[in-house]
Structures are given as structure tokens and as C-alpha cells.
Image (cartoon, rainbow, N blue to C red; front, side, top):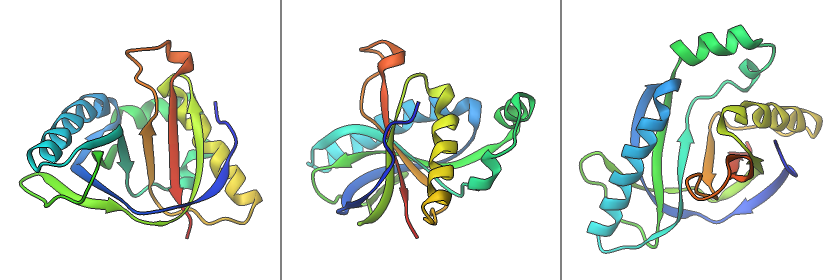
Length: 169
């Protein structure tokens, strides 16, 4: 369920990310491995992990979210591959090494909201963002960042919050 949708100005933030391309149903496994690898790289560089992990989803066609019924969504879940990066925020910039990419989340304007509840319903929140952007004449970049605010192992799934950011063009 989406909460208030707004545009927010954000400062750049150093991060370490692990690149991946995976089928949608394999994302949880990719997240776990990527979070661990990015955390290890930040700590081995002598920096500190700041906050909860994130996933950056690349090359999203926002209009593809429209008009898919349950069968279409299920088929996409089974077959589609998603380009993504999995990472952690760092207390300072760290160099890239191996599969760990030292980079930043760029400063700029972002549409932002929270998704609350089970992750399998996050598509509903994205559809609300797309509708809001169209109603407010806002052009979305072709990717999103999901920052996990709450740890789903520590609270009921219906209360878990995920912060969604989408850059504004």
C-alpha cells in the first residue's frame, strides 16, 4: 500500500553495489548474497555501513505496469529477467574491487513514497506512482531504488516499510 507520494531533493550518497541480472522469482536469493557482499566490501575498506540495504532496479518500462492481469503478471514473474544492483550505503566513498562497485546514488530530484506490507504487492505501489506522475506532469527515469526501512525478520510483514525512490527527468 502506497503512502504519500511527493518529490524530494536528495543529496548524493556513497554506496557499494553488486550488479546482477536475474529472473524475478530469484530476486530474494540475489538480494541476500548482494547485501552480504556489499557489507563485507564496505567494512574491508575501513568504512561503515549506514542504514538498511537497498536494491536498484534498472531499465524499467513504467507503462508496462498497466493492463496486466493476474495471468500476465504471473507469466512475467516466471520468465522476465531484471537488471539490478544490490547494495548498502557507506559512510564514505570506497573504491571498486572485484564484483563490488564503489559508486554513489546521485543527487537530484526523486519521486518518493513508502510501500507498506508484503513485498509481492509492491507492484500496486508502483502503479500508484506512475498514475501520480502522469497526473502531476512528472517524467520518471527508467529505474527505481527500494530502500528497506524495516527488517521483515523483526516485525509482522503487514507493517514492513520499503522506501521507493525514482529519479525525475
